[in-house]
Length: 511
Image 1: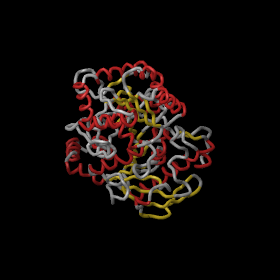
Image 2 (image 1 turned 90 degrees about the vertical axis):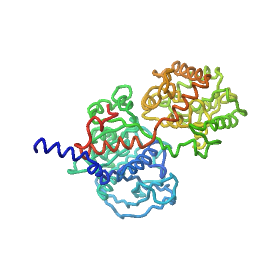
Image 3 (image 1 turned 60 degrees about the vertical axis):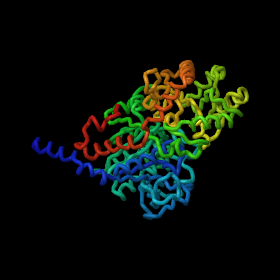
Image 4 (image 1 turned 120 degrees about the horizontal axis):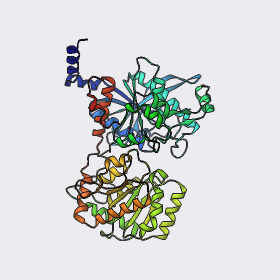
């Protein structure tokens, strides 16, 4: 092809006519969970929200998940195809393919939504729950190996049925999809998103032999296979994409990630700004906005009255909504707790987790009843009331791939105090008195640094004009899924039509 012809073609490919090809681009998300249909953790929120944002940009996108027996009938699934065969190890398994839709307002029964959700039904393999234990575990359980290997293989069959161009896989549960797609030529392109590198799905030779009929001496690491096989690897913030290349945050896979560095891109997760909106959140005592801020004071008074008996606007309220794990920096909070209680403040913690943390908070509630309260449960309504009624939101994470809490807090005018790591570093602008800042960050994973940063925030709280500006700055941040969806759309286009998207544009946020 002559140069002039080549560049004429390139110019044509950049026109609006060619860009309309996104309407014919078929993307299939394959994942273990998808909100609101079935949810255990934050992975479900992403798989439920990003496809809807992509659909609004004109992309033909759908989702494939297991048809868990706990999925509500109100989602009105319809049978599409019976007896789809899958080669599963040395035997053949079958599944029935059902279809429902992501509801437009995140509630079942609101009619046909934007995005098709394909439900893979095999009651022998998929039970009521997503995970075999109460919550996900880093290595995965033996029972989960069978479930998610089957999900991955069945997801590939769904892709063939709908003729998907790109398979977008999420975490270790479907990370073997790119590995199993490698031999198919021509085959679909694959994207693997790492939501948390610590969760890898590692299974011993006996499990692999029994399920897949593969004889091997070493363990099988699902996430590792996806990292080495996917066309593109993404993770959920630009800073986390850089951090996982290091020995500190690489979780044993840093060497393999360095090999794929040119194919690793960090794209910040978005926030469902319709779902989290203080102007219309029904969980709140009073609605408020950037233009009408009075309702936030009423929400603070309500929160103080509920937990401490009476309201006092002059006392700063610190909130924390979190899983109680070492990743979330709970150890740092424990180390400074007595010093923190010596300050003029009130602290509320909501969450569940390890016994050592829950027992500690129970003791502290008895010791400091006028200054501290812990609710050791999951309560979505109360979580929103804490986001709205607190002045300061604590996130001292050891690592944080993206983080949703700080985004919700800022959306609700609550100022985050967080460690400068992962998505926290990418979303919170550290206060330095220059204007435009949205919170307070500390660098080292150190309890003294954490305490000093809280004290910086408490000092700023005393200056009402400065504090109000920090709050408003946070509320004006754009954390919508639209921004993330546009970044993924560029990524998909680069995979399918590499001449269309300039390299410096499609790889923004890459490491």
